[in-house]
Length: 89
Image (cartoon, one colour):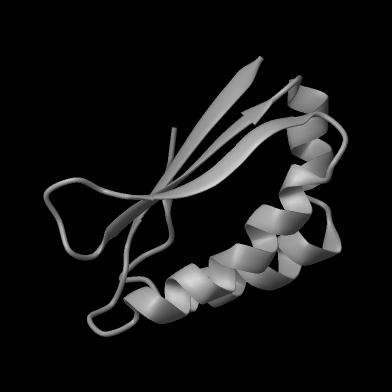
């Protein structure tokens, strides 16, 4: 199993836009082959910190996910709402 934590800080006033934009990414990603879980979490103790936490069956499934239409379209939108691109671990 692969677990990914993609943390980001959202620009002031963009929290609601980030949550709404991430919703489609989450819904479609959960339907992908190999996705165990996929969720958006607010970072405790901050007002603009978020993390997308993903669990996948294998590295190959993660690589396939990163090539999907919804991922390629929505990640740049999320980055535009953020102070910087997400820090991924």
